[in-house]
Length: 282
Image (tube, helix red, strand yellow):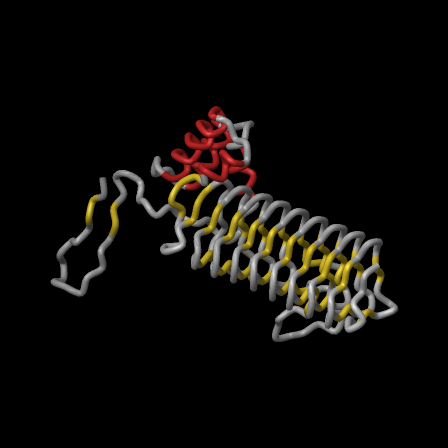
């Protein structure tokens, strides 16, 4: 087991087989490293961190730091990381606020330089957080989602499966599965077509998702009509995931940048009183 002589490893830490620990790393008591984990230099693995097997952690990352909260709990929870993740330089992942609960990172995720996962987040499998992506507390990121550089996700938001969030986006509401969010506006601009094709979605799947997307964003239906139509028209297949996602939402959902045909946009101008400046779109 190659442990650099300049590393500090607590005798109360639990290390699996074939673990590699570089110089100036610090492994605190009650930390767990599974088989085959590799730590570059200056990595901190804090107490309450549980890493599965095959994880690679690069220089300067801090794993299992205390939650950033104005009311720090006396007994915070833990951080659980699955298998085969790549956590690049200076990433930070924090423990749960609550004893008996965990911040969770699944399997085969890629966290690029300086990505941040706050307390009580739930990150699935195959997720990519690019440089400087920020997840607030209690955020959920579902499998194979992609969060681009410097995007900031507000606490308690959810990002659905196979969704893509553009760079510098501000995510203030839930992002449905399979869609793309524009970084400039923070609004939905269509399906994540390239990502879906790369993930193996075939022509029939894509046609169904396009039809569901049009129903949700382009038909001008009120919300309960959208849900009823999804339940009626897409009881199975990938598009059925839209209804499951919407049914669990509490923060509202990211709107589309393009207004539906026939929508009326009120232009608020400080001009002549009594003059209607409404503009018909479409």
